[in-house]
Each structure stands twice: as structure tokens, then as C-alpha cells.
Image: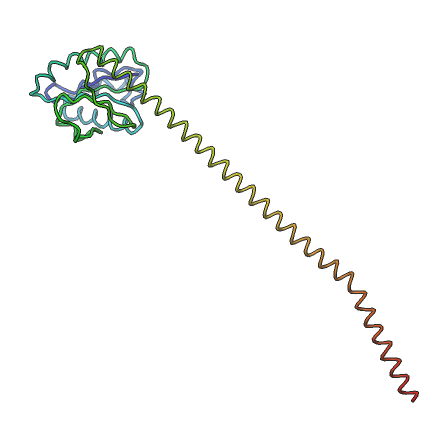
Length: 236
């Protein structure tokens, strides 16, 4: 699932389309194999390079890590290490089973890629880029050294990405549980308040029923007293 490519305007075209396979086309959002003949017949070098750059940026946003070697066309060291870098990329295409992009980039296109230009102090500038950040290469420039370094960083990036995904899922579950608890507490408190209101109304009705006969008795006693007074007064 690894893919190696180069962005070099001095060649006839970016060799990205030549490295496509049926398996990689779906993973990296390339054109379908049925349409690849028409794509390969396009001899416009600039268009192919722009397509490659757009593809790189799209996959970077998705979290696909990439190992890039930035070269200067007048740099002798760059030309010396280029075969080893390209061979390492081709071998990883067959051996490495996780999503990974391995590129050889002309210096004039760095400003269009997710590379920190302030870190480029010389050429070749070999760097591994992932969502975690950038890791610069300072080892030996041979096929085995390149492969080991790329695989080590790719595995670390994959582990970090899985950890971040797990943490995100855990946080989502926690927030869902928190919301459910709040809703349950809210419903419980509302139900409790409604029960209290109902009990208050019942108690009021009960008090009215209990005290209303007593009030009637007092009224009757007052009426009797007033009657006795009126009778006494009349007799006198």
C-alpha cells in the first residue's frame, strides 16, 4: 500500500501515473484503472505535476504519512543519492502494507507541499512528514538505511494515528454518557417537582375538607348565641 513517485520538471512527466496499481488506485483516490490510458496519454508535464501535488496534499489531510527527499538540480549529492532513494521507495511499494507516500521533490515545488521551508538548510533535504510533525533524516544514504528509517517512522505515525482515533472515540463516548446522565437527571428532577406540586395540591384539598366542618360549627355557635341574646332582650 506504499507508493513512490517523483516531481521533477526535467523529466518528461511526473512518474506518479507510471507507478499506479489497481490496489493503490482506490486507496489514494487516483483515477480508475479504466481511465488510466487517457490519463497516461496526457503529455502535459505541468498538469501531471499539479495533479501529483494535489494528491499529496489531499492524502496528507487524511493523515497518510509521507517520506520526501527534496533535491536541487545542481546538487551533486542529490544526484548521487537519488538511485538509492528511488530503489528504497520501489522496494517499500512491494513490502510495506500500510498507507505511505515516498517522494522525490524538486526544490521549486516545496512551497506547494506541507513541508516547513524554514527547516531546509541544504540539499538533499530528507524529511518524514505526518500529523505528528516532521522528522529530518541524518543517516547514511543507502537503500537499507532509507528503508529502515522510513518504516520506523511510518510505524510510529500509524501507532499515533490509531491512538488519537481511540482517544477521540473515547471522548465521544464520554460526552454521550454525560449527556444521557444530564437528560436522565433532568427528567428525574422534573418528575420529582411534578410529584411535589401534586402532593401540595392534595394537602391543600385535604386541609380544606378537614377544616371546613370546624368553621361551620363555629358559625352555628355564633348563630345560637345571637339567637339567645335576641330572645333575652325580647323577654326583658
